[in-house]
Length: 192
Image (cartoon, rainbow, N blue to C red; front, top):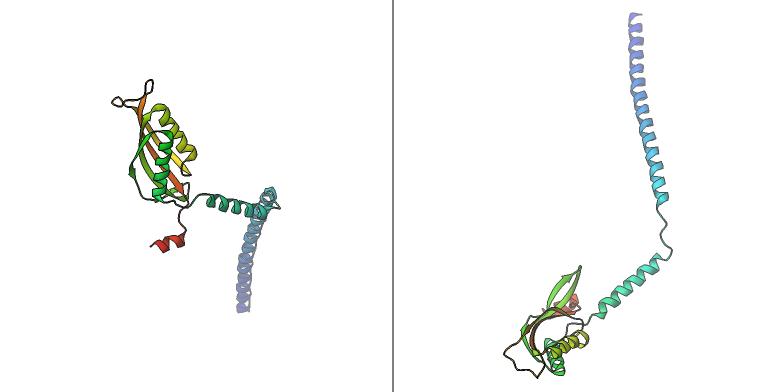
C-alpha cells in the first residue's frame, strides 16, 4: 500500500511535470502565432499599398531596349585616323587658316557614365586672323567628323604675324576628341 501511494504520488508528479511542460510550450506557441499573425496583417497592408504594375510593361521594356540599341548603333564605328586628320585639315583650308596637327593619340576605350566608347584625341594649332579661326572652330563643330567635341580651346594673339589691315592675327590651340562606338567583343578578338 505504501508503494502504491508512492507510485501514485510519483505518477501525479510526472503528470504535473508533463502538463506544465506541454502547457508552457502551448502558451509560447500561441504567443508566437499571435505575433506572426500581426506581422502577416502588416505585410498584407504593405502589399495593398504597392500600386499594380502597368499593363504595357513588356511593351515598354521592348521599346526601351530597341531605343537603346538604336542609340548605340547611331555612334559610328571608329574611323580611320588619317581620314579624321584630313577632314580637319580640309576644314581649315576652307576657312582660310593654317592648321598643324601636333599630337595625336591612338584610339583608346574610355568608360563614360558606365558605357564604353572608342575615343581619338587630336591637338591642332590653327593660325590666321581671328574671324577665320572662329569660322574654322564653327566648321569643326558643325561639319567635322561626328561626334566631335572640342575639349579645350586656347586663343592667343600673335604679334609677330602680319595680317591684313584691320585684322587681328591669332593662334588657337585646339584639343579635339572624336567619339565612336567601341569595337564589338568579336572584333576585338579578330584584331588580336
